[in-house]
Image 1 (cartoon, helix red, strand yellow):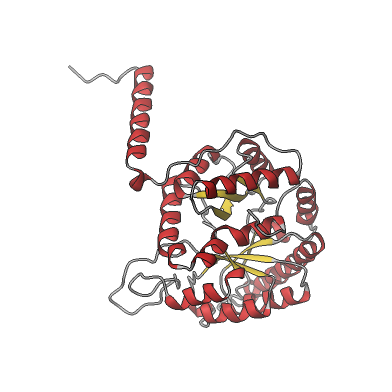
Image 2 (cartoon, rainbow, N blue to C red):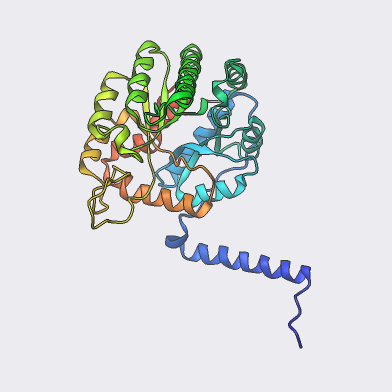
Length: 356
């Protein structure tokens, strides 16, 4: 007799039982599945920015009261259909108290923050591709409106200032025009950042002209602030051979309004052949670089934490944060650890020092 497929109801019940068993096993094997959640009182979404800050403070303090180091993840990108409940569960397991979230669509951010008001911090929307650089400056109107509604920063801007040296003719001219358009638009965003006092999140591959231009803009608009993500990750060494802890130390000494989100990428597999390492935070053997540790300790006011994942995959989110905590946070002095985990992020988001 051929095997019959179980009825849909039976299949659903069996799937639910398997999920329950997995959750039970996760609870029993905390070390393998992450941390247990910190107990938080149910909360409604506050109507004001001040109310949100008060609620965020309670969340961070609850982690401290539970003898946990509260991490503030400053770089979470939500897709339009993101399961934010899964994100918050992953945050629980990873020891993340708060996450600053953005998305291409403002309504995605609003729904997420309304559903999880004590865990998710809204940034303004992050337009797809280079649509933010449109000459009509629609992003300025949208960003100003969202900041006026209480958002805590200008969501991630993706810049690509690579000159395309191998291009020629029409393609070369088109590339030059695209760079010019991006530079003009980002300068306008920095002016808005300086005017309102809200930092702008930046994704930009390390590149010689790009970093030099960014530093000049930050000097021109000292009241602005830029949060550059994936610090320590160099996928194309030929674009900026000097990139590393020494260069960033020098830049942060010159530009107090530049903040850096450390990459959470794993160190990568050891290679028996000489090859550039894209993740500079680690020595060839996979150990946290003592040179980077020294820069973090000496310039800690400029560094913050963030996952910077393009798509939410809860298991990967937990693994990255656990590795980040074990390999980087736990290798810093207690004052630097606190600043990297949450103090610096708190000040950047709220404008005030953590005094809990």
